[in-house]
Structure formats: C-alpha cells, structure tokens
Length: 166
Image (cartoon, rainbow, N blue to C red; front, side):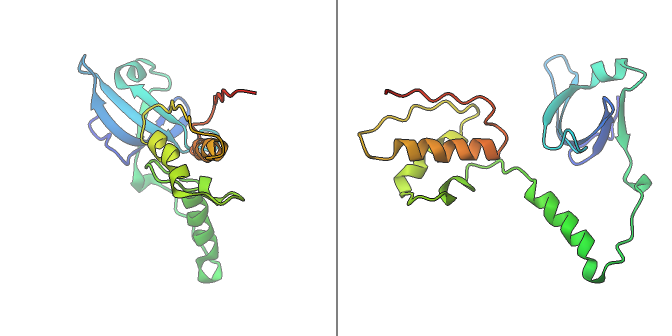
C-alpha cells in the first residue's frame, strides 16, 4: 500500500499526470483516490482510482511523483514576466467549486437579484435539476441563461435540457 499518497500529491497513473484531491476508504477497506487531471488533454477532469485495481496493472500502475525530482526552469525575463503569465494562465483555468455566480450576471442584460436565486440554488446541488416556473415577464429565460452559463463555465454543462411551451 502506498502510504505517501495525500491530498496535494501528484501521481502518474494510466500514462497521465494527476493531482490528488482526496483519499478515502471504501466499504471494502480499499483506498479511493480522487484526482484532477494535470496533463494538457486531461486538465480539469475529475476521476477516482481504486488503488487495489491500479496496483494490479504492473506495467503502468500508480506512481507518486516526488517533488525533489522536479526539473526547475530559470525565468530570465525582466520582472519574471514568463512566470507571472504561467501563474495567471493557471489561475484562469481553475474551475470554481463553490456556489457563487462568476459569469452568468455579466451578459448584456439587467439582471435583478431574484433572477440570480435559481442559479445559486442549483450550484449548491450535487446534481443540477431545477424547475423554473414563474409568471410571464419575470425573466425565466434570463434565469435559465445565467444557470447554463455557470454550468458550462464549470465544465458541468454537457447535457442540458430546456423544456418550454411554444
């Protein structure tokens, strides 16, 4: 059993690099490793590994990357411009995981406070399923647009169904 897997560690599994978010025990006593993709093609994707299954694949397996073996690159630009751009680019790719609204209210509209409530409620749900029903002219379309924008921005808006009358 690998004892040095902890949240924040980087692991190499299935030929890709992952950042460990949490480690938990299943009902069988096996460790479940929840991680987020770091490599270019998997960036931001969440996955769960069962340590026992990954250990059985001797060819690839699960490997903890050691920070002391990291190759450092010197930034010789004035004011560390390349490093600052790198840090800023990574911060902009970070997906928010809280219930706050980040993008939906920035559209070309005059959003009222009550129109933000459905999106805020939906973002607090583990699985977003919401019925927006209101009188004519109260902004159901705007409420739906705000929510859809937030879901797409958080990479959760893969399948969206909007049902409406004609």
